[in-house]
Image 1 (cartoon, rainbow, N blue to C red):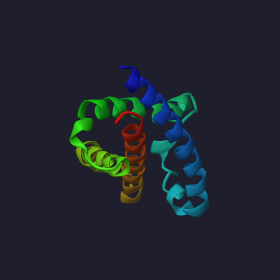
Image 2: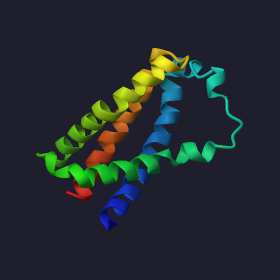
Image 3: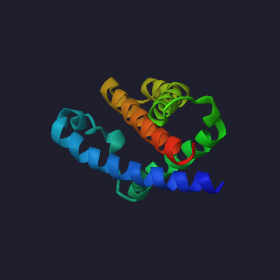
Image 4: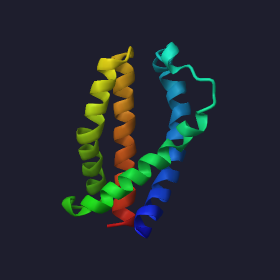
Length: 135
C-alpha cells in the first residue's frame, strides 16, 4: 500500500506540473482549440476549480493501484512498460468514456480528441513513473 501511495503522489505531482504547464503552451500554440470551450457547457462559477487542479492526483492514485495490481503483465524496458500501460488504459477506459461523452454531450470531435490525447499522455507519463519507482 505504501508503494501505491508514494508512487501516486510522485506521479500526481509530475502530472500536475506537466499538465498545468502544457495548458499554457496549448493556449499559446493551439488557440483555435480553446475557442471550442466558449460553450455554455464549460462555464463555471469557479466554486469547483480546486477539483480540476486535483485531477492529476486522483488519476495518479487510481492508475497507481491499477499498476500495482497488473504490473506483472507489462514487460521490457521501463519506458516501454509505461507506454504499454498508457495504451492499455486508453483502450480500456478512455476510448469508451470519450465515445459516450461525444455521443451524449454537445461537444466537438476536436475537444474529445484533445481529451483522449491528454488522458493518453497522462497515463503514459504515470506508467513510466510507476515502472521506474515500483517495478
